Image 1 (tube, rainbow, N blue to C red):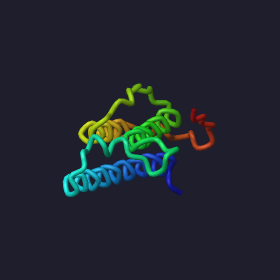
Image 2 (cartoon, helix red, strand yellow):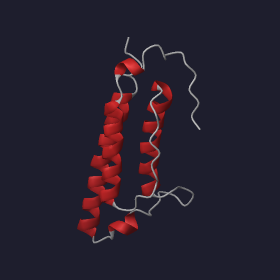
Image 3 (tube, rainbow, N blue to C red):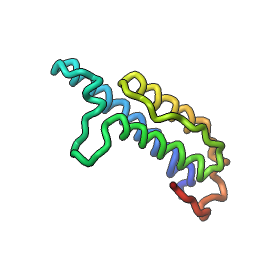
Length: 118
């Protein structure tokens, strides 16, 4: 049976790496179509949805805070103020580094622990 670590951290890492690949395609789309990258950061798929930058920040926060709460790792509060592709790549890289610092033994014995996500 996979460990709790194996069911969380590698999944989050894969999602974050996928987000980088998606952002790179979006950035190239801006270049190809003459769209301002700053404009794309504010785009929404629907009018009641938050913009692209918020979506990436939420992915980052969700992955980081899940590990913080499950493994009992101290949280590093980050501002959600990224507005460029470069800043979002850096945010994803910081999140990946944070997750890579988590050790499997920090998850041991936590399989039945209640985790509150706020």
